Length: 180
Image 1 (tube, rainbow, N blue to C red):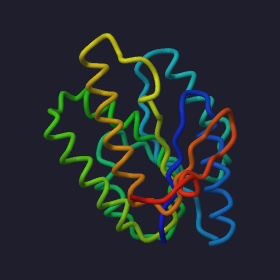
Image 2: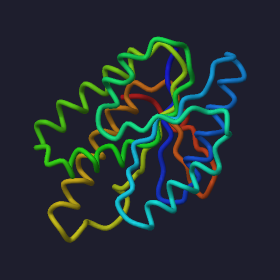
Image 3: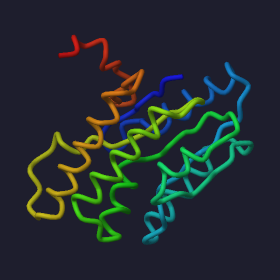
Image 4: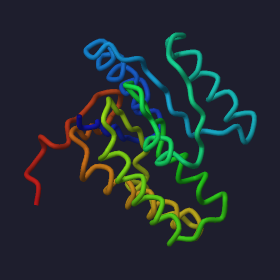
């Protein structure tokens, strides 16, 4: 079973759309939904954002908080489920915050790519698109933007569906043009 990759800018509607997609897939398969959360509470604003996401999710969904080792979690999942992985941009943030080098991040990105491809059940992956804005002023922000761009490309390359969210509307990227 292939996976869906949903990406877009801040407040583009990507999480809402991903939740709808996961719900539909769960209805079609009769599998439970597991929300694989990568966000961590780092300040009061993040606490409010996480609480809002939790409030909007159906109560019967299982939430697993996995801020670092998503590939390992996916590799070890045995029971059928629809997994909603939200989100790669926070996962990368956590890797960088932990002090991982670019080489270590590339290694983890490769492991994640393999785990996504090998996952046997339903999977919806969310990420931010941060490469359309201005060039960040600080080196760390440029490093983050570049690493997330590479990770998003890697994930999109093997996804069955690539959906770009624009103002709450899904755009099927695979239908926009030919693969090169």
